[in-house]
Image (tube, rainbow, N blue to C red; front, side, top):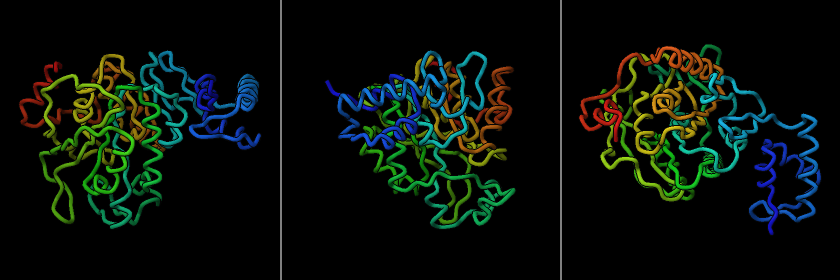
Length: 335
């Protein structure tokens, strides 16, 4: 029998950082894949059990029967406990989730690559890049997408995703070239979807009208429908009240292809909360996080109002274009 520190985390539902601290403090030798000796395993198990009882470990939050260890209580939790959002950075948040605990990951990371290298950006939505971090700036905190950081993020995504499940990662053209190859090292990449925004946007070298969505899997799972194209014509959100707000229809199509009722949907870059609204519309559960207070406040208000009224206060009209196949998929609600 092998003894593994991950099994302690899963068994007690404790925050990974706490377990790592005990490993360092007690100078536990950890081998390949987190394996430890039987003696070390018992020492850690006893120590964590005692400290958990004394309330010295991260708290445990229960989402629909799944124990989820977190450092803080949810920023917002719906009354039926189906929707929960947390204030935490993406990697720390994912590290706190048990292995094989979510059914679909749909996310739009706040990539920094192009902006940090070119220092461009003076549009109506994002403001001047030079003002990033200053009080009142319209730029938000970005994910520093170094190869090392992105690989750590994707490895955590792989760990928390159940077997035979899907992940959708959004990319602009720059991040697709620089980071997408890393995804192939971890997931089985099945396709790259092109989101055609219908209306032309900003751009310094050709104005942009599209983004990409990398579709990949952990194990084997067919799509729910064979009628979904790999080009999605869905209009961009005009005069968005949150920077980089995406239409809910983009996330609804992801879930149309990969989700079933009551699936747990995860978005570690919550942003404007569009993925959460799509999950509610698709009768799924949702868990997500963002480090930004602005994002969480915006998303909370949006989610609360949608639950009450079934109206999206920050996307008041449909963003569907003139693609009949996509319109049929989303309007009829059938694959």
